[in-house]
Length: 180
Image 1 (cartoon, rainbow, N blue to C red):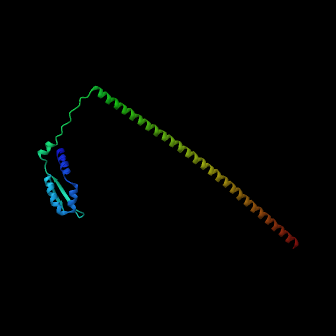
Image 2 (cartoon, rainbow, N blue to C red; image 1 turned 45 degrees about the horizontal axis):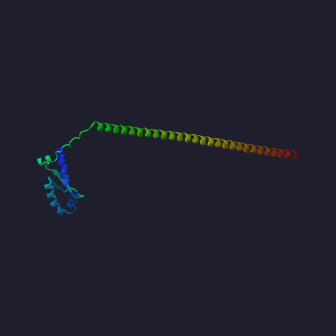
Image 3 (spheres, rainbow, N blue to C red; image 1 turned 60 degrees about the vertical axis):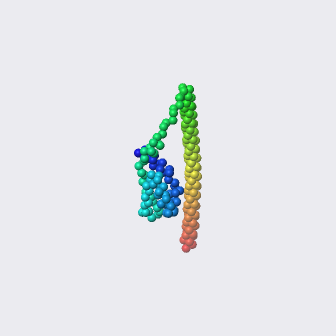
């Protein structure tokens, strides 16, 4: 399966995307292009079922034994590694680990500080909101008290006026009865 994939990748590299686009735009050049594909080990069949443009079916031919031998990759020769090299690499890895650990701790510290700042700010805003709400409530209560006192005073004044008017009416009535 891997060899088939490698062969497919190799053959796809040989196909020029530009020539494929040109074949779609210039149908007379498509015949030459089909020949190129067959030489490259691909079989291309045009599909005329598309209304929006041209479509092609690309069929891979089985890989030849010649291409399998070309893809055998040998590993590079290993270097002799000394104890000093290993120790240097281990020390460098330890330094990287410490540096990364320090960065993580620094990031966590910054995050905690930010969370603390956000919490303090939220508490301040909550306190400010509570104070503002309390002030508004006391102002409303004072206005309500003043309005109630003014209303009661106006009612008392109207009652006094009615009482004075009633006294005037009674006096006038008594005067009429005495004169009559």
